[in-house]
Image (cartoon, rainbow, N blue to C red; front, side, top):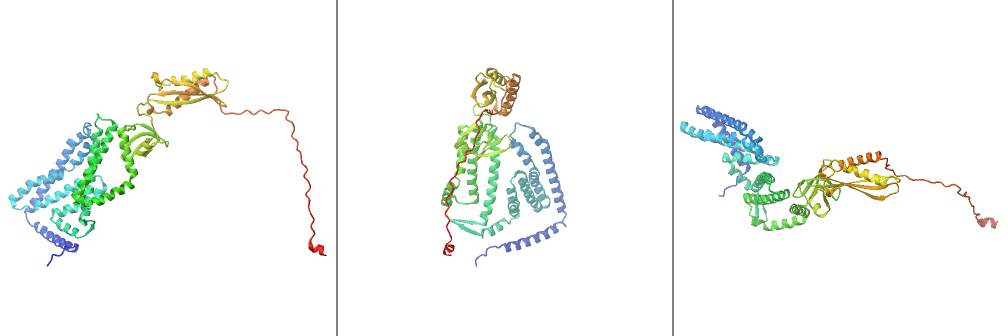
Length: 463
C-alpha cells in the first residue's frame, strides 16, 4: 500500500487537533506553582532587555548622530540595529534562565516556548527596523513570519510537502509551488540586501576625496553591475534552479533583450562613455539642442537629470549627450561671455556712444578683471532706424547667472546714453507727399454693341 500525499484538509485537521491539545495543556500548566516562577523570570528578562535598549540608545546613538566623521549610511543604520537590542538580549538571557529552570524543576518546556516566541519577536523587529521596501514587508508578514512560526513549532516540513505536490514543467525544469514561494522570498531578500550594500558602497565611494566626480560615478556604476549580477546568481542557487538547464532559455531571452532593449543598452553604454570621457560631469551648466538649460544633477545608468532654472528636473536619455550637440558652459572653465546689442540714432556722436556703452561693462562689479577677457564694444551694422553696436564682456563665474549680469549692464548703458544726450531710436518710417501730381482721368472705352439675332418662334411663323 502506497503512502497517500498529505492534502490541505488533512493538514488543517491535524493543526486543529494540535491547537486543542495545546490549549488543554496550557490550562493544566496554570494549576502548577512553577508556572508563576517562569512568568516572573520572563517578566524580569523582558524588563531588563527593554532597559538595556533604552540605555544604549540614549548613551551611544545620540552621540553617533552628531559625529560627522562616520559614514552617513552607518549613522542611519545604527539606530535601526540598536532597536534589535531588546529581542536579542531576551534570547541571550533565556539561556541561563533555561539552565536554571532545568536545575530547579527539571523541565525546560516553558523556557523553550519563550525562546521560540523571542525568535519571532526578533524577526518581526528586524523587518520593521531594517526593511524599507513596502513589498518586502508584505512578503515578510505573509510568508516569512508564518514560515518561521511553522519552523519553530516543527510544522514547516509538513507545509513544504503540501506545496511540493503542486508543480508544472518548464522545459526540463520542474517548478513547484514551493519553488515559486522560495523564488519570491529569496529574490526580494537578495534585492533588498543588494540595495543596502549599493547604498553603503555608493556612500563610501563618494566620500573618497582622491577621485574625481566622473571616476566616482563610473566606479559606482561598475560596482552596482557586478553586485547585482552576483546577487542574481546567488538567488538562483538558493532557489535550487540548475543554471545549465536554463541555457537555451537564457539564450533566447538574451536575443529578445537585444532586440527589445536596444535603447536601454544604448543609453547605458552612453552613460559609461560620458563618465570615461568626462565631457559632462555632475554640477556642469549645460544646454541641450532642444533648449533644455540647467545644471547636471545626476548621471544615471539610463538617463541623466538636469535641473532647470525654473525648478524642473528633466530626465535626459544618456544617448542624447552623445548623438546631439550639447553646450557645456563649465567644462574647462567657469568664465562666460555675455553680449548686449545696442542701437543709437543716426546723427549721434558714434565715438562718444561707443565709449559710454563700453564704460557700462568696465564699471560693472562682476566683469572679469583678467587681461584675456577684457570687455569690448564693436560697431556692427547700419540698420534702417539705428546704428547698431555690440557690447561684449566676460564674467568670472557663469554659474552665478547671466541674465542678472546682462540686465545690470543694460540698465547702466541706458543711463549712460541718456546722460550723454544720445538717443536710442525706435523703428519708424517717413512718408513724403509730393505736390503737383497730375489729375487722374477716367477713360471709358466704348464697348461695341452686341449683335443679337431675333429668332422667331416656329409656332408663330407657322401661324
